[in-house]
Every structure is written in structure tokens, then in C-alpha cells.
Amino acid sequence: MTPAALTDLIDATWPAAYLRRDGPWTIRAGKGGGSRVSAATAHTPPSPDDIPTAEAAMRALGQVPLFMLRDGEEVLDAALAERGYGVKDPVTLYAAPVAQLALQPPPITCFRVWPPLAAQREIWAAGGIGPERIAIMDRAGTPKTTILGRCDDTPAGTLFVALHGRAAMVHAIEIPTRFRRRGMARLMVQGAAVWSQEAKAKTLAVLVTKANIAANALYSSLGMRAAAGYHYRIHPET
Image (cartoon, rainbow, N blue to C red; front, side, top):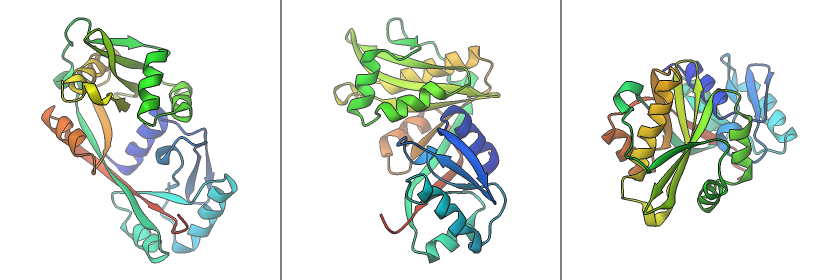
């Protein structure tokens, strides 16, 4: 997946409060929604002299300067490193054909729900996904849904999935601790793939930090393959 296609997919399915162009930069207003919706990206190759423009734009939004570095942006990465920016959260994009993943979960295990139920919001909140990220789901303007997982007749997991063109992306997978290692995440991803197939998607994608060993193992076991990646550079003031 090209860097531009990766960014377009994220921006469509997990959108910032707003985007604006400033010179070679795309600046995102995150409104507390995390790195994906707050990081600046280059839409044309910038020079090191362009970096202060992005820094000033992000500070004007009350955000610490944060840049997303995608494949092929080694020159910008080196320029930020020279300014003291540290690496934050290297991420892998996993993807697979929807048809490969679209297995109907057993009855009474996965339900499509929109808008999210209070039980889902509680699961997300317990995992650190608060109102600011729920707002991201609300403002996604593409076809979307959530999957509610159930186990032992109890809410046991949730995720968000949205469509962009012929690709769907899963976000915000959360499983309460007591339901982990029981196959719930696998079933919910398969349920998301069934929804994606019905929405005419050809590919299902998900982002995961390289540090999340369990999630990387899950997506690999589902036959998903690393298709792209990125990392952030964050200002040394943090």
C-alpha cells in the first residue's frame, strides 16, 4: 500500500476533527483523539526548513508537534531526528482479502450495532478509549458499524469498522481482561469481515503497534500480512 493510500484510508475511517493544508503539510486537529488524528503528514516532499511551519500550526491547535513518518520518508525522518524528535509507536498495517476472513461467527457471539451501546462504551472506557475517540467514530462519514462480542451471555468485546472505497479498516478493538485468550478477538474480526464483504469491500485492514505482541500474533494467525507501516516522531519537549 502506498503512503498516500494508507493515509487516505486512515483519514476516511478514523477522521480527525478537521484537516488543513499548510505548505507541504497536512495538519490534523485531533481534539484529544490520539496520535492518528493529531499527527502532521507531508503531502509533498518538504525540506527541513518547512518543519517550523508544521510545528507552529500544531502548537496553534494546542498540540505537541507530532509527525507521521511513512515508508519512503527517510529524509524527513532523519531531519526530525536531528532536531531531537523521538520515535513513538512504530505501527504495522496488516491486510488480507475480505473473502479469506469472512467466516460467520457462531450464533449469539457477535452482533452489529450502530450507534454503540452503553456496554460497548464501558468496555472501551476501561481500555482507555474515551469520549474523544467515540467522537471519531461518530464523525466518520463512510459506511460503518461496530461489532459487539458476547461470551457467557455477557458483553465480552467490541470494535469499530468503517469502509473507504474497496477497503475496510478495523479500529478500537478492546477485550476485557477476563475474556482474553478465549478467541473473542478472532471472532469479532471475522464478524467485521462479513460486514465488510456485504459492504463490497475487497480488503480488510487493521493497524497495530509493533509492541503489541498478542495482536500481531492474532493477525498473523488469521493470514493477514504486513502491507505498510509508519512511526511517529514527537517533539523532545515531551
